Structure formats: C-alpha cells, structure tokens
Amino acid sequence: MALIDDVKGIIQDDSKRLSDAEITNNINVAISAFAKDVGVFKIAELTAYNENLLLWNLPTDWIEGISFIKQLFDNDGNRLEWDFSYYGGTKYILTSDIYNSGKVYIEYAYLPTETNLTATQKGIILHYACYLCLMALAAYYAQTIDPVLSPDVVSYGSRADTYIKLATEHLNTYKDKVRQVRYIKL
Image (tube, rainbow, N blue to C red; front, side, top):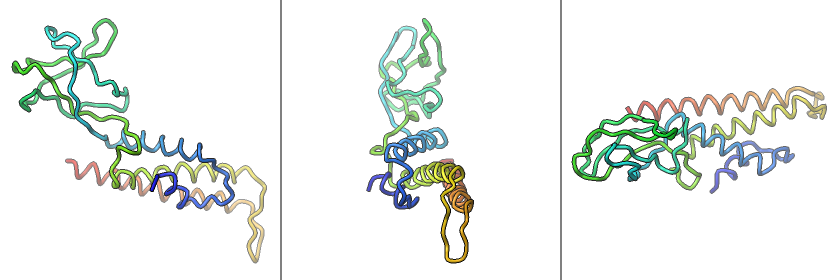
C-alpha cells in the first residue's frame, strides 16, 4: 500500500480539508526529514574529474544538506581517506592514493523516493507525515468557526486541540523510532 493511503487511513480527514497534493507534499517533506535525520544509503562508483589530482565527481543525486559520506573505498574494498575540495568553484571529493585500482566507490546518504524505502523506513516516515498533516488540519480548525456538535455541547476549539494532541503523539513516536534506528546503527 502507498504511504498516501496509510496517511489518509490514520488522519481520518473525512471532510477532505487536505488535498492529495498536500498529503503527498507532506510525505515528501517527511522522507526528506528522515533522510537527513537518519540517512538512507547506497553505493556508487565515482567518475574521475581529474584522476591525476585525485578529484572525483560527486554522485549525480548528491543533495547538499542531506547527502553525506559514510565511507569511501577502492575496487578491493580498502577504505580511502578523503576530504572535500573546491576546484574551479565546484565541489569534488579529494582522495588519498587509490591503491592502483583506478576505481573509487562511495557509500553515501541520498534522498530516496517512496519506492526506494524499506517497510521499516516507511513505517517511521509515516509518523512524521501524519504529524505534518494533523498539524495542517489543526491550523485549519483553529481558524474556522465551524462548530463541533456533540450530544451535550457545541464546542468551537476542541477539534484543533485534538489534532494537535494527535500530531504531537506522532511526532514523539517518530523521534523515538529515529533514536532507535540511530542506536542500532552504532
């Protein structure tokens, strides 16, 4: 099942205050936050900008602020020392000697799409997406004068408060799960 269906099932926006586009945007923000908070990794072979200078192009899906290097290694799996270098105004990876293998590989964090995520990662991201959607609903209901009818009383403020409480629970769950994932990686 797609994350949008999961989010809709949890937030129960029967009045359709949030469009599919808004929910999808919140899911993308949640994926970005997760990638920045935890890191989703893949391995790529780097292309040489200048092999004599030991400068290597960053992967094409490198995103400043989200991507970071977990490790750099040669064709034989030997870890390489590296740093970033600016040459001609462009950022490159500067390596140490490449042990005559001629190839350099990088394991790095990138911004995934929903299809690149595991079920566990989607489960964590789901909480943050729900948090964002519930806060959007709380903001809507905090500004409206539509009453909430119950058998005993008409209330104008409790719907926003309920959404804020639910949103906070999802945010706290997201934070706890991110801490667990970080702890397991150590």
